[in-house]
Image 1 (cartoon, rainbow, N blue to C red):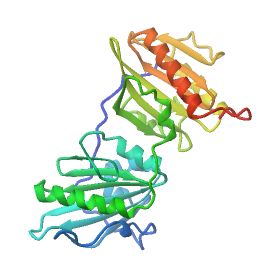
Image 2 (tube, helix red, strand yellow):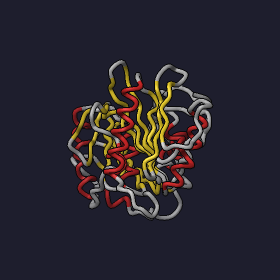
Image 3 (cartoon, rainbow, N blue to C red):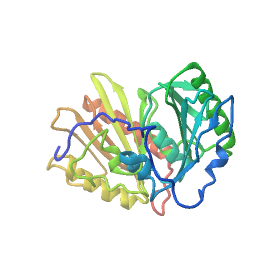
Length: 317
């Protein structure tokens, strides 16, 4: 294995409530204000709404903007609420390109207690997060109280009810076999830069990922340790093969010649890694404690990929 580092811990950065951004010029083109209620349970909007687009998002999101832009970010509306005592609460509604992108942003932070709001809402420490349709929603109270928690849930339900689109999880997630999968580890993304916090390649383009590709990542409980599975889907089978050849030269030893469609090898760490082409999908096992578990996971993922994306003779996609 060459030019590669071990997987890293992902840290989710959250914009501060005390940020002082500038309003985006002009009207909000996505009418996100229609998703946010006015006065509710004694809480009222405090100050003007703030709207942002791709060009102005850095003013509010600061160092975290790239993480949203990588998921087809289109716009953001921020509204502050206050209770009769003046306690602040901030509501953020993110408009993403697709429901899959909204899910992808949400899944990057799996911590919290499940709440029946929207799709898979999670609550912790005064922060409520959920996705529905192409929207990702963050609601945060400056001070966590019983009253603020109740209002967060009520506000979340009203926002979710105002979103007419239901949306669905990415089809690509079906390529991750369910057996032994650690559900909290699942991630969905488009670019290698989003993968970096979980598994870092020194070659920043080792997988040839871009806005038109998609990838799903998951960790598996295996005898003797864990295995990491990554499934990347490209526009065509030819694109997937180019990525396979590039990845093989970066990841495997000099024995990789790229003539076949799969490769399994013990890597420098002593674990096993593997790659396999299945139509327009490139399936990778980046860490596995044994050859047997590596090969079994690779085969299961390939079978799942064929079910999720039956190949067409014309292009293999």
